[in-house]
Length: 141
Image (cartoon, rainbow, N blue to C red; front, side, top):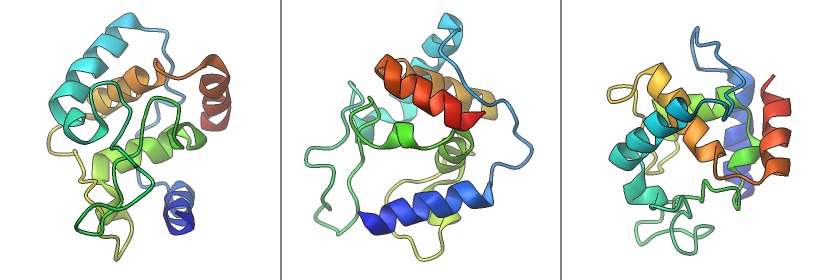
């Protein structure tokens, strides 16, 4: 788990999200949240589940030795990361961002536009408790 945290931290320092600069992403737009829900259901739900709860026993590894999908609903660590990092992970996937990483989190740059990714993040954030949402907005500015 410390290794995964190190990877995420390293990504946040390198900032691989090209010229994208729409941060912080808020939950102020119901349209954006609804658009994000559709994109989430079409691309993310198979691993992160309908209620964003992630895989069962998500802190462990699956039968192939890969990290399981974490919850995105505020009960995991997603809210600890700024928007730029989260956007990069969704867009490029951890395997493309971190040399030698063999997780199952693929990138979605072929399937989702930057606007779609922002919408997915707004949808995810709409599940978070207020204190976690406000903390994450603060680190994303």
